[in-house]
Structures are given as structure tokens and as C-alpha cells.
Image (cartoon, rainbow, N blue to C red; front, side, top):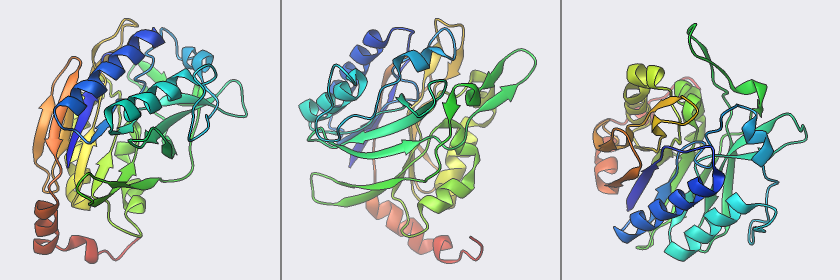
Length: 281
């Protein structure tokens, strides 16, 4: 199955970001992708952390998002249906019971435009190196449940896909939990890694998660200089189950296309049956 990580350099303007997301989804579909994934905060990279609260949407009807109440969700649903692809909608802010905090949520839409999964980011990023400071807990609430779902490709094959977001990458126990009942074929991690942390750890950790779980990893990222002064690392990539980088784009908006290889994954798991040798957890 062909999949695509869609890299963006999002702006403080939601409409502009939605338009670019639609263009990238269409481009990926045109070159054969059956599943596409947008980066974290694809809809907004605001001037201030609290800007996301102003655009936070209520969770829409899974079958028919209302464009007036939930324009971001309606756009993703429409793009999935128009292009006949599975869309993993990066992250967007969803309203919570607390007006001062939202959830940073991944929503998944099937090729019919129906929402089939929701994952709220569990681990909230906090970083302070004396020059740059981030604390997502100031505006976000953490999720509590790992989420995996199944995709049926056009050939009738079934793929189990685990969801995660950005800072989750540093917590391997989440990915073990996603494969507890059944191993995942693909882990998807929308991200907006800072350039500092990305340069040090992005590829290292993504490849480690692939090797540990003997599965593919698809990581769509924000990649470049943003109007708010933030620089994100980019390097959206697809990684194979042996830890090999199959496709990557360093910076700038674009489509990172690659193929999930079930036969290769099965061979790797047969040759190194580490998933059957787990003792703890």
C-alpha cells in the first residue's frame, strides 16, 4: 500500500493552511497514495500558544461534519472523500470541558469521508534551554488512551495502524501498548519537532520505534521557518521495519511517498521474532 507523509510550514492563517492541506492531499492521491497523513498543528502555527484555543472545534458528527461549526473537520472529511483516500488529519485543537485548555487531537477519516478514529495526544511537550521555552500543558489537556485502528486497502488487505503525536515519540511504552493485543503494521506520528531537538533525536527515535516494533513508521512533520519565529525540523519520513529510511524530505512543503511492504515485514519478523520474546509488559 502506498502512503504519504505530507510536510507543511503552517502559518497563523487557518484558511491558508487548510487550502495547502487540500492541495497536498490531492497531489498524494494523484501519485497513488491510499493513506495520507498531515503534520501536527497543520491547521495553525499561531503567534501565541493560546491562539489554538480560539479555533478549537467541538467534535463533529462522525458521518457528516458541519462546515459552520467544525470547518477543519469538514475540510478533512471532504478531502478524504473527494480523493478516495484515508486521511490522518495531523492534529487540530478540539474543545474540552475547560475553556482554557483544548485537546491536541488526531482525527482519521476513511475514503467515504467518515471519521473512524480519534487520538488525543497523551504526552505534552515541555522544554526550556534558556533561549526557547515550551509548555503545552498551559493550553492543552492530555489524552489518556492509546488508539489503533484498521485500514482496508484497495486490494482488500488489512493494516493495523497505531496513532501517536510528536513528543509521544520519546515514550516507547506507548508503542508497546499499541501492539499489546496485536502488532501494528504502521505507526503514524504527526509532529512539529523543534529544530534543536529534531537535529539531535528525530531520526534516531523514529528508527528505534520501527526496530523495536518491527513495523513501518510514517512521520509527517512541520518543516521550516514559521512566521511566529519558530523553526521546525521537518525531515518527514517513512521508515521500514528493519529501521531503514525509505523516503524523506528535509524542509519545505511536499509529499513524501513510499510503500508499505507486508512481505518484507513478515520476513523480518520471522527472522528476528523479538515480538514473541517479550517478557516484561
